[in-house]
Image 1 (tube, rainbow, N blue to C red):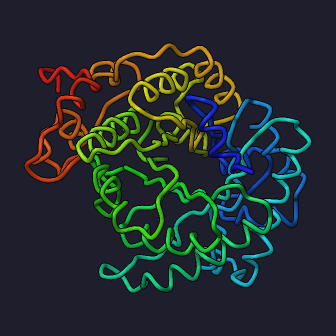
Image 2: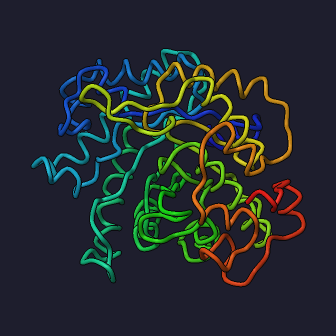
Amino acid sequence: MKNIFLALLDEKQTLLIDGATGTNLFALGLQSGDSPEFWNIDFPERVAAHYRSFIDAGSDIVLTNTFGGNSYRLKLHNAEDRVIEFNRAAARILVEEVSDSGRRVVVAGSMGPTGEIFAPAGLMTIEEGEIAFAEQALALKEGGADVLWIETLSSIEECQAAVQGASVAGLPIILTLSIETNGRTMMGITPSDLVNLQADLPTTLAAYGTNCGLGAAEVVAAIINMRQAADLAGNDPILVAKGNCGIPEWVDGKICYSGTPELMASYTEMVIDAGARIVGGCCGTTPAHIAVMRKAIDNHVAGSAPSHDDITSILGVITSGAKAQMRGDLTIAGGAAGPGKKASARGRRRQKTDSSVL
């Protein structure tokens, strides 16, 4: 039988992912500083309610409550020996919720970063990372995950370790980076680096893209730049966009996100036209946002990729590095396809970018 993720990609032009895990678990009582993964054992009914809220909102893909479920993150809570227990339980809870819903929903095993800095910048080796990611991947598979969803990474080395480790499970792998520093990740990866990374990975990714970062506007720009880089490389990848719900603000002693459901609906339509086939929300995104995004996908009429003005007038500012990449001047910020290259004619047509406003 064909994997459900791959089957849904064949059937639908755009798939909807869920929203934030942390934001919504905090609403259910999670306290700052606590590890959400403990809830998979201690409060499974709350984790189930979280999953159910996004299934009911129309998500085609829901991520397990295991973002920090590797041994390095769990060691901070003296639980590094509970990786298998937490990950297996999280996946099993979601499998049951999907079954009860009667809908076809992908169970995506969330795998976040280790929190360690990889060599040569740090001390963590790729081999050590592989072991940690493999342990988590196998536990998620045992729990019933359909795919492995590696997210919020920032270095080439951790990407290599994560994909190599996850590949032992034999499931489709999705990889997303957090583009948050002038069109780059914290460790300097550009959208084009992710496109070109394919050649150095042990397995072909089922999809890749970006999540979290600086907000919806920057995510749309990153997808345009990945699409541009893929065009130059002659590739046609499945691109993933999972943007934050606006910008975080400190209000009355807690973090709130500025994005309204209407803004997230606009982001959804723009990022689809930019080239993403899998769309969802990250930090701050609630089931209410996802329900509106479901309607936006279902009613979307394909258009040209948004221009700089289109994005900034509705979603907010774009950093200078991302703007440089959008206009094809790839020598300015390490751009979307390597030093000295320009966007292809096809890429420029897709973008419909007016260089006078960049």
